Image 1 (cartoon, rainbow, N blue to C red):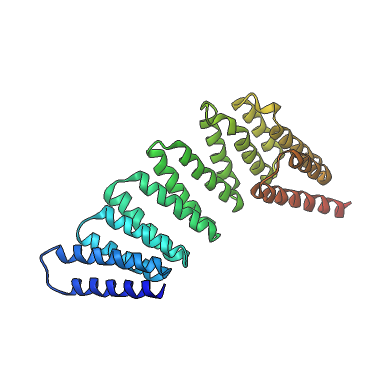
Image 2 (image 1 turned 90 degrees about the vertical axis):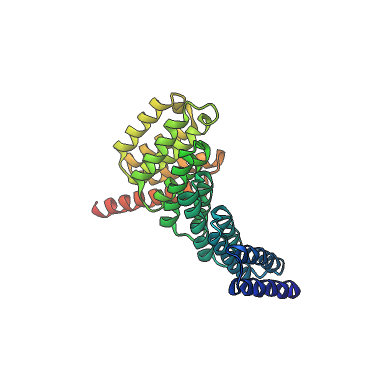
Length: 290
C-alpha cells in the first residue's frame, strides 16, 4: 500500500510540474489530466481515500480547462466515491458539483437525477432529513421529466416518509395519496397501492383528527374499491375507532394483530408509537379531570 501511495505522489508531482510549465494551449492540461488519473488510481489501490479524492478534484479542474464538462462531472463523481469512505460532507460537495455540471451545463437530466438521489441518501445516513428531502424532491422532479416513473415514485415516497418523521403530516399525506392515484391504473404498480394508502392513513392517525381519518378511509375506498377488504383498511378502521373511544388498549391490540401477520417496518412502528403516546396522554389527562 505504501508503495502505491508513493507512486501516486510521484504522478501527482509530475502532473503539477506539467501545469506549471510551458506547453501548447490545452496540451499541458491533457497531459496533467492523464497523470492525475494515474495518481488517483494509485491512491485508491493504497486505500488513501483523502488523497485520491483530492486528486480527482484536480482532474476535474483540468477537464474544465479543456471544456470537457462530462469528464469533469465524472471526475467529481469519482472524488465523491472516494470521500464516501471518510467524509460524507466532502462526498456531498463533490456530488453537488457533478449535479450542477450534468444538469446546468450538459443537460443530462437522468444523470443529474441519479446523483441528486445519491445526495438524498447521503443526507439520510447523516440524519439530516431536511436536506435529504430537498435532494429527493429534486431527484423526483428530474426523474419525472425523463418519464422514469418508478424512480420518481421511490424518491417521492422518501420525501413523504421524512416529512412525516418531521411531523409535516399534510405534506406526507398529499404525496402518498398522489402516488396511489398515479399507480392505481398501472398494472405493475397497482398492487403496491394498499401499502401506500396505509402509509397515508398512518399519517392521518398521527394528526389525531378522527373525522379526517374516516373521510380519508372513504377516499381510499373510492380510489381503490378492493381496499375495503384488505388488512390495511381493517387496521386503519380499528385505529380510528380506538381513537374515537380513547381506548389505548384497543389501539395497541389492533397494531399487534396486524404485526403478527404482516411485520410493520420501523417507520410505521415509530409513527404508530407516536400516535399511541398522544392517545395515552389524552386518556391520562381526562382521568385526572374525573
